[in-house]
Image (cartoon, rainbow, N blue to C red; front, side):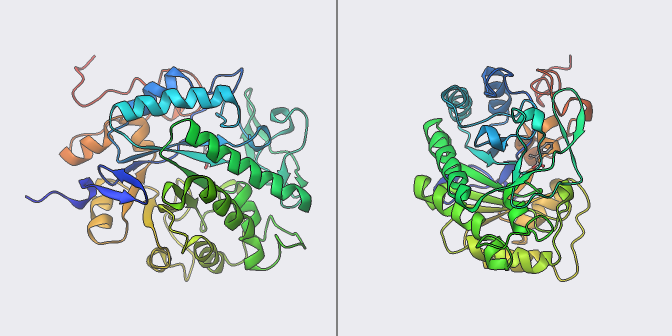
Length: 364
Ligand code: 8OZ
């Protein structure tokens, strides 16, 4: 039998992957409380999963201002770079590849996570959404609109995060432009009411995405950069009057640069895969010049078929990777999978994090 394409090597830009199974970015809220750094625990968790062709880290804030939840890791301080270096070293030792997902939450935050300051956003419009502040779920705070003169500083923060990712030994970065966070807030007309060059027309609303991508590409080279989009998702109460047109504008803005991959959340994040009328994932894939990474509710057969039929070059798995450290190996063998425990997704320590069994572990 010939080997299924899903399990064969491929190059994502400059990054050589052993297979096309990807660990999706997954917020787990286990960073060290005193400095928002990853540490040995994260090195163990990610290196357990190094059999994936590519690991994408959990969302990692580019600045204190970009934080929206308790215990998410950052990538702006020396301690955080040192913590991530432990992770990348452990993954590389096992032959894996890992990129950092760089993240600014925009309005999806709370003053208690921001030293009493309001979150920043394209416009001063609160999201009808909640966040976790370390004690419980709270309504997100009403943001203040970023001044035009502040936008270059936000782009600088992305640039610095890319430099830090390089210093921490990452193979590249994924720019988080999905799920209703800052870059998505700029793209959607429900959250962006700006009247300057960053609001109004489609061209203006995808401007910040394009400028951030270009800044990060200047640091790392395009072949080490991917972008995650979720144009048809309403995660974090994000809305647009014409998501089909916006999706095309966003993909066109980041195409032609030689990026490594476009990571597409197909449908509602973590939910329904249904698309709005007129949405066409194959057309979006065709407009992009790098690899297309599909995500959202894929199982083994869906992934095999999508790659075999050319609908995806890579497939990212989220919850299945939480529960199966050796997911790529299990999928290849068509072995049984561990079930995930939703109670330990967010926060805590080793339990539900590094203690899921491998296929060859003896039953406890
Ligand atoms: C779940 C909980 C907190 C954050 C995303 C970074 O949706 C997240 C996230 C997911 O992209």
